[in-house]
Image 1 (tube, rainbow, N blue to C red):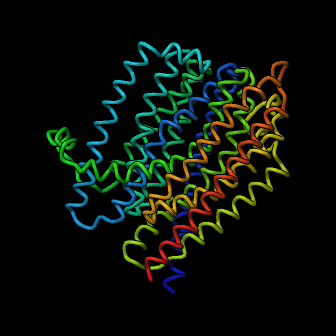
Image 2: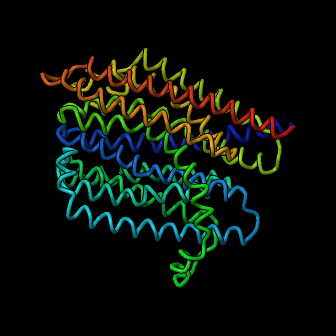
Image 3: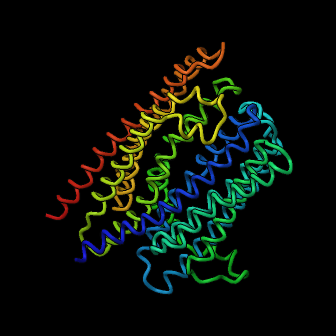
Length: 435
């Protein structure tokens, strides 16, 4: 009976987060029709979104660290310590952002030219958004670890809704541009951060306590957990995002918007797996801390495999449907690319579940071996992409872009294989220690 209730609770909690993620994803995606009309800037806008994903990679580790800490916290002193740690990290992030803004002021023009951005303001707004993108997973982690999934869902939902409302208003008033799109993105991140922080249930700190927090917390313990958790969680985001940066770098800027459209549809699969992983993670942490067995990993893998099967099937049968809903007729030429992109992301979705299971069990040492795959993957993309880009000099070539997505799929399959091997190693080691 208890096992059945546990499964029902998992389905209810992950179901709510899936609904919140779905609404957040749809509203976030609905920003694209407002920006796509500026076709010369749409590729730059999408590249900046992927750059935000890359900027936020360290925060993935923060979310996992604070999920661990919040799941293990029992006393008021534990919660007070969590609040001080959040404040200290926030101060450090804002200080680093100030340095980055100074650097961009003097050196940003070269990066703008390299990334084919319409203006330095787009890069500056992306950096400002990146501050909240870095801090948001930290407050998400507290809600996740304390299993306050109701408020976590609302915070996630607000991220997309505010983004859409702000971008739509700006485009309506000032026209379609990458800058207006990125301002909307930044406001969405800020709103979600404030809502998640306000509902975490942690004690408030007086302003006079803020700066002393930087010297009062145990930075060594945070770093010890942070590095492997960032690498593990960030590897999934990196594998999902880096191709857009490479394509934007080497391919014709007038064409990358079409590739970006197919990529956004394919990457949505990873975001829909996220809610199940978010519910699974603290339950495995708690199970391990209390030394109670749980089959939540098996349940999550089965649900993820089912979701991937449905997504791949729809990608084969109706690849043009999401394009028809969001984009104009000129984008229909990338319909075959949608099918390939969804298939390429399916192995990464399964790998994300296994990576988070490894992290939740505290098997940090094996994560460093996993980093070999993203490194090799990046090297292959960086070497082959310029040669493939030569095929698009005379105009949009669907076969060239399909070759890039096939490389993505092979990279994600290798990543999945590595996570399967490492998961087996973790369980074998746990069995040996239990004897």
